[in-house]
Image (tube, rainbow, N blue to C red; front, side, top):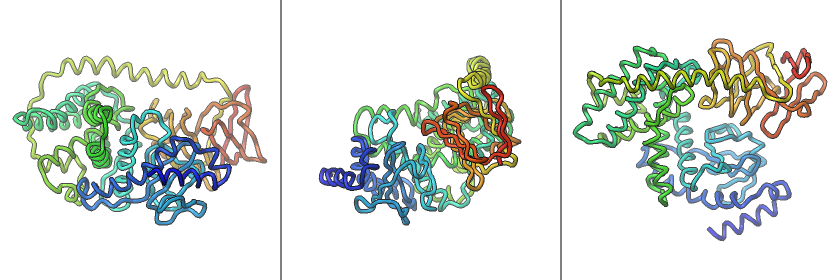
Length: 449
């Protein structure tokens, strides 16, 4: 591995000023661990998820280099640096966070190692294995039931539902880690909680949860198995306990935290299935069922009588009201920013090219506060907002954007004929033809093509 590190430094020096200026010691750490990751996942993939196929994957640092591996058709400007590893510029592909994107037309898993919360390389690569499972799902599992992100934004913030959900999550963890002799009792109570909550919030929103569990539970299962098999120190052990188990029972009373909980409830259902059945994974993927419905079919629970939940209800009533008020406060904080306020109105709905549902906050049914990602486009018109706050107003569902509001410094705004151009701090990039523009004090109003 030392020889590869040395050769990497030489390669960077030969590639010219652009790459040399971007190269940091952290890049060397991760590129030198990438080949080991590729060996690790080949070792475990068949035992973790039989028939899983490993697609292309990329590691990168925001505004730095990107390293692409296992890609069938690397971009023409990619530079081969070792075996099957290609060097790219992150900014050329708009890579962001831990997810998947098309690189040269091929769905590719990727993750950003330039984030300080990774305590070691193992959680980083475990999340990359998670994203690789999503690539496998999207390429090969045609009848998998996905969640609809639009439903998350209108998910009812109902204290009765949250009270039962809190109890339900505790029961699920008890089924996995608690006394075996209480397993059936906890299973029946867990099943009953779902029935009661469906009566409160309706099938549409419970199906949202089931869809998120169905797609994310297996991916989290892969992530967990990677950490379990390759952890190296006490910090990794603590990470495993908190991320995959104990964070499941941390209280939450807002739709903003719901999808993160679904990752964990899906994971724990997968772990319980693995304790009771061999080779269940292929049967589940071929069933066409939600993960929860498959779980119920295999475990055969019965309805039971729930315990007194007065404590959970009292807490939920109090904290849900606080969360609702927080939506109002966050919107007010957004409107009081400094800089030029831009109101971008679209003549026609633009193409919806991406957003982060876990960090998109529904202020109300038509107004959404985005904190991490919003991408829109129409032909060569583009809007990309990353790690920066923006408001979108929608018609019926998140995909139909009527307006976008954002605050930027005036010096970041320019015009080229009838094109609005904004470039600010590598977070806001907008290039869009407008048909009307009006300035009132510190506010611009645009009608965009």
